Structures are given as structure tokens and as C-alpha cells.
Amino acid sequence: DSGVTQTPKHLITATGQRVTLRCSPRSGDLSVYWYQQSLDQGLQFLIQYYNGEERAKGNILERFSAQQFPDSHSELNLSSLELGDSALYFCASSGFTRIDTEAFFGQGTRLTVV
Amino acid sequence: DAKTTQPPSMDCAEGRAANLPCNHSTISGNEYVYWYRQIHSQGPQYIIHGLKNNETNEMASLIITEDRKSSTLILPHATLRDTAVYYCIVRAWNRDDKIIFGKGTRLHILP
Image (cartoon, rainbow over all chains, first blue to last red; front, side, top):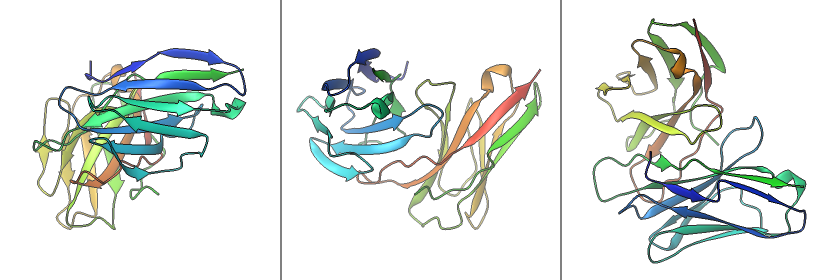
């Protein structure tokens, strides 16, 4: 158990819809990262937040947005969904208040767009 | 883009040591080498990281060359459960450095 919790584990929705994926980081971690992994593809970095502020952006579509709340949990919002958005979405958290800065990943949300 | 180069796949016999190479010739002085693995659609799992000294933990050993341009992850006694995609990543220790995954090495442990 990495200590990072993602909900829901599975999500099936129709094209054109909007969904929200939630990530609860490890206790004390202030940095949250989001990744997308399509079938048999690599992990694509989407966006990173640190202490509520956006810190880095990857290949995140304009239809996607994210935010981090004061309690450090984060949400990834996906709108106007397309079939190609079907993928595993992972979040990770890490802390920068101690020496070890490795990121810990959740088990992912599997999104299926039909 | 990923800053590392890894072979796409490797085989290793069960019980033998698995040695996974990684090239990171453009690594900067403030960048660490991290290794993660992903077992079939699970969340990536942290294995080990290092700056310039060799490191060992309960999972693996990390050997970094003196010029820091390459490294090797060693799984001392590979088991079938070590079958996974292994990712070598370089990143600086600061709150703004995103973690970029390359294609990794798909390690097959053969019974």
C-alpha cells in the first residue's frame, strides 16, 4: 500500500460527458502529479501541483483541468470526453520536507469512454 | 522528453541476478537517478534512487558510474514476481521538477 488513494477505481461513461477523478496523497505530502496511460502506452505526464499551486504542465489537453485543495487532495476533471480518453489515470505524491523525495503512486482510475 | 535510454526488453532466468542498464549522458549535477517499476497496469512502484554513490536497499542495488552518465539496477535474485516494466528516471531534487517516464525496459523472468 503506497498510501496514495485514488477514487473511483473504475469509471465508465459516454462520449461528451464530464468526469472527476480524485486523489488523496500520502499524509504530509504536498506535491501531487497526474499521469495518463493509454492501452500499451507509456506514462504520460499531465500536470503537477505543489501546495495548491500548479508547478509543471505536460501534455494536458485543454479539455482537462486539475486542482489541489488546502488539504492537499487533488482532482482531475476531464470534460467533453472522447473515445481516445479511455486510459488509466494515475496520481502520485511526494514530499519535499525530508531527504527521500521519491514519489508514490496510487493504483489508478481506469476510465472507459463508450 | 525522457532524459534516459534503456533497452526495450530483457530476459533473465529465475534466481539469477537481473542487471538493467540505463544511459543518462546529459544528467546534471543536481539530478538524481530514480528507478521505478510497473507490474501489469498497477501503479508504478518506487525501487531505489541515488546521486553518485552506489545504493542498496531490500529490493535492489543501484550502481552509478563515476562520470554519472550511466547506471545499472541490479535485482540480486530475480523471481517471477519481478516481471515488470522498469523505468530509469533522472530528476532534480526540487519541488518543480516533474517526473518524466520513458519507455522503460520490459523485464521477463524465465522459469
